[in-house]
Amino acid sequence: MSTSSRRAAGLLFRASSSRISLRSFASQPSVSPLPPTQLPTATQPAEPDTSIASKIIKGASNNDPLPVPPTVYPAPADPWDVSPVTQRTRPPPRHSALRIKLAEFGAKVLGYNSRASTSIRETGRMMHGIVAAVERDSDYWYRAETQMRRVLGRGERERVIKKYMEEMGQQWKGSGMAVDYSLGLSISDEPAERERADIELAAWLWRNLFDARGLGSPPLPSNMDEGTMSGDVKALDLPTQLMEVVCFMRREMTRLDGVSDENVLLGNIGTWGPAGLQTQPIIPEQI
Image 1 (cartoon, one colour):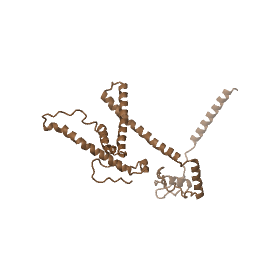
Image 2 (image 1 turned 45 degrees about the vertical axis):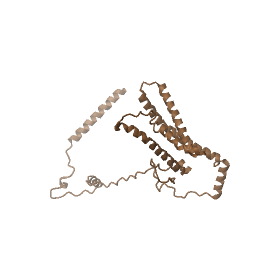
Image 3 (image 1 turned 30 degrees about the horizontal axis):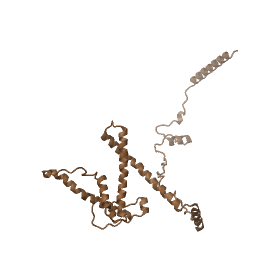
Image 4 (image 1 turned 120 degrees about the horizontal axis):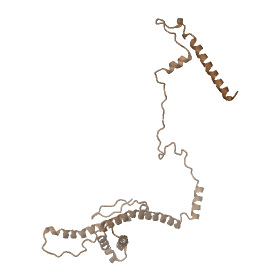
């Protein structure tokens, strides 16, 4: 007998056996799960079921919610806030006097606190501040070039813009040298130079701060009414304004002269005073 015929015979045998079992189950009479004598009546209550399964079912069908413990989350901690728990409880180690002397001797031998190393360290810090200041000046030059292109037009050649920028840089350098010269005259050994120090400073302010006001030829006197005399009044106020600015610069220089070098390096230079003339004596601000 082949394998296929064997499989067919097995399937026929299983089908016939399942039909016989179904017929025998259907021919049996229906049986009540409880005898008639044990069924509860209206006047006789049913006995309580004390089995374990019934207890489980009754417990599961209870409408009261089960007590669930609340979930407690930890409070959010700030990683930048040093709490007393994370702080070191033990005191910092105290070095002996011998160890401190050995460290100072080693630093002296290596030249750490010598004049040369101190000069190198402080010069490096000052140059770092100068480089940072130059980087901040790039915003000024960008705005100056933008304003220049706005005045000259978008179609202006790049060579013209570059030439004007170079001239502006030369004017800035000359302005710095002029103010240094005028301020240096006040500490000169020659009395004549000290007398004209304020005149040189006022001339520098007139050229740079006041844009050389009144440099053109003055108008000829003529029959002018009072409404056209405003320009002459403005020209008369120029010497007074120059004197007020010169006094302000001298007063602030005297105040800054009383500030220590340590505070100057740290940027603690105090508060600038108001512009204008002051009749009270100038007292350097103590910081």
